[in-house]
Length: 482
Image: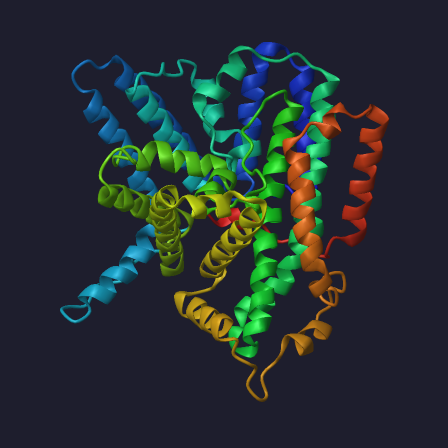
């Protein structure tokens, strides 16, 4: 059941109505049942996985809290359970390929004898379980109510692709439940429509354009591939931030708050700032549960660089069990290390600091940061590492199209999605401005503070545009695969 589907358009209002019409004591169970139904709509059998991990982590959290001498052992057990589950479902084939590559000269490594299907959202709820057990170990009070704990992990608006929640912020909302207010509708509905606008109208139309370029990079010139890369940068932003808006809006209809996940990321003036603005819930999770436990920045320069590199490498693997995700993580780790070393130079050279901190300097820094991120997106989006290498080589050498190959100019008229293709060169600057406008709308209360009639007009305009200009087929959200 996708957020951009008719099923969800029927499911969400029904659950909202049932939730607010029910007595208070039934509301958490209703949301829990709805969340499990939402999860089962994809593959019913995996309900046993999420319920099993929920039960295990609930009791492990209690054991960590109650234990006096074996807290660390219980925590290690919980972490091993969660990571082993994630590794089996997500990394078994990747590890199998790596093992066969390494040991092929010595002996034949047998293939995994059965099919493994990646459960939806496993990367997200496993990270929430790890956060829970670690924070209980650090002294936070465990959740005593099993329904509340189960809903924390399975809450359907954030179930599939986050934001990754912290139980200290989320669970108390069940204990101090909000009363119904039209403010919930006023906030939730515009957010949902804004998210659908980003996803269906912008990201989905870009999807078909981007797919054509990345699937066959050998057919295009270096300049063509730069255009495809720019398009993907905006596609993934509008796709993922659109999902987050729908998740936040859906949660708001029940009176609950979930964290903001994006804050104008392409306005970042350095790579560190970018990761403070992009996928914020994952960035802070990696900081709190990987980077800092490794030693963070409170150690030598060499060890700090190691910690950054290792954190981002594992963050890359979290996104997918493939070499190009691993390299993407290493790339961002190296970028963070270089930025950190550059900051040391900047502090010691006064004129350099002044130049960078000036308005022209910040403009140049922002453009440079965006293009550093853009190169990373090529690694992220490419089908394979080989394909990424071909694309990047052609982009940086500005290789021309070989005789007989398809050019971008030849490719555009052959596609049956006229909203995007003929106007792609005009559209890219418009998308850059849209990033600013919609990011600003995300982080301000302009719509919330507007009169109700103005909100209704805004929602009507968004709805009409979505219905008029959306493509015939809307693909899944990009982060559903993680």
